[in-house]
Length: 580
Image (cartoon, rainbow, N blue to C red; front, side):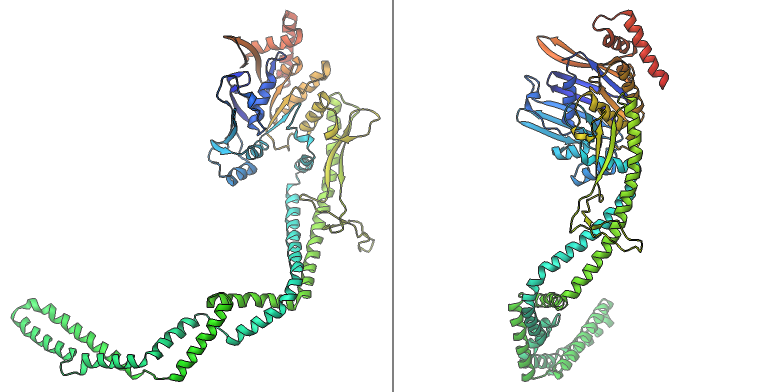
């Protein structure tokens, strides 16, 4: 629900903050007092485009802020997360708009947001029914959603969308394969040549490093032989070999340790050094004995490295790139070898997936038509209650034939073999397009809801639809801007009762000039225009029960409130309380 609305320096509003209640919130005021200004301000936080002229004269900027409670829906959370907007305050959402002479900025939960994002969030919260925009029921794209919501068909819709996504994936894969067919056929000979060239050399992962290491050893075999032999002699065989010198040093230290035990630990150290030298000498002797002088092996290695270098220059600069290229062209070559087989396999998968999609789409269509019949009957009853007994209301279904469509016709022979080759386009949410049609006059054929006349008639149609769809409609807040245009008397009472009942499911904010509706409000606000210090301002204030009765009475008798009008007003208010 809309908990509060704050407005500062917007048009004639200097500053106001309204606290709304969860039921029926009534707004009344004299013509020209500024009721439309309030609706205009509210539209700012819904993401409507702002005219910089709305900034109050001599003010630097206009600010409009709405605080919404119970706003934690999957769609809102998704929009906020996708746009890096803080979601921690949920289920509360704060929408704010700042307007200056240079433009406007939007904020959600104190984070800057584009108008598109503000509209996406607001569209999940509030529906404004007025003389201008935001009349969601006039948008045909919402009719299907309302139908599915009323019938509880969300699970079947999701199943359909999953099947459709699978078909789309397979069709895209086949189209991509078909687009590449000519290219692959042209490249087939090149791929074959490259595969033979690489396979003839048969490079192996890590081979290059191993060859380089072996080449260095073979190229430096003489140096390795001489150096290891010399080191071995220095450490072990010479007259003054290091090993012998360490033995002498060890003996001297042992003599010293017998005199002073501080030398004992050093005896251990020199014995360790002696062992290390012995092990190193043994390694050098063994290495020296296994050194090979193999000119032919060295030549073979050099030739092998040269072959690898040629491949590297042609196919990516590294041996890893060569192997990666071989794997890739191998796959492409195999694909080109069996192109027809791969296309046939995809065709079979597509046919199977389309059959599954068709089955779900037709079941969904059948369920929707059942739901549509229930909606049609309920809407006609409600329109009759609202004084439109001659109305006709229809939910019309259309399908678009498409030779490349993914959904097949549902007519078949007694043997179960399809007799109709017609195919239909698979829309995002089904095979059908749905639109509401209505006629309110005898002898006039129903027309699309979006084309019916504006004013009181369309407002009552909106109210009837909202009343029927109330329990399934996801939007928690409904704003009606003078829904009572063109009605009076008993019809006004009926509209008021319908709105009062609808307020059990939705928070309703309505601007009205009819006492029959105003008397039923759970909360009542009065819009007034005042002059202070030579400046005209619009003020809005909540009314207590006595003030509400007086305001309702003024709607009955005008500026001069009679006792009879006041008594009538109290009776209207009491009637509303009894209904509860």
